[in-house]
Length: 105
Image 1 (cartoon, rainbow, N blue to C red):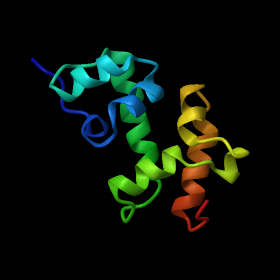
Image 2 (cartoon, rainbow, N blue to C red; image 1 turned 60 degrees about the vertical axis):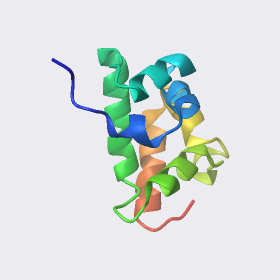
Image 3 (spheres, rainbow, N blue to C red; image 1 turned 60 degrees about the horizontal axis):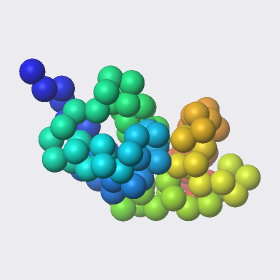
Image 4 (tube, one colour; image 1 turned 180 degrees about the vertical axis):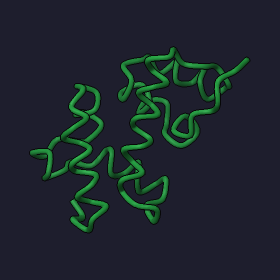
């Protein structure tokens, strides 16, 4: 039985999925084609999806992607995707909460 689809797999480009998970771009392409990531990778994608939900319901998929890739002053100018790749989920979660509360950085 196949696991439930992961929303981010269909929203983010393979290179960004790879950066978030440490997987190869090729693996991310396979996920988009219907393959399943490993359990730890799927958990990381679900965690990232939940974190992006903190940006607010009005943040479109394109806005969420842009937020992940843009330098963020709340993260010392780092891009959230870079911090997530390094495992700094707490700092990115705080930045996302700030954005969702109206601090638009």
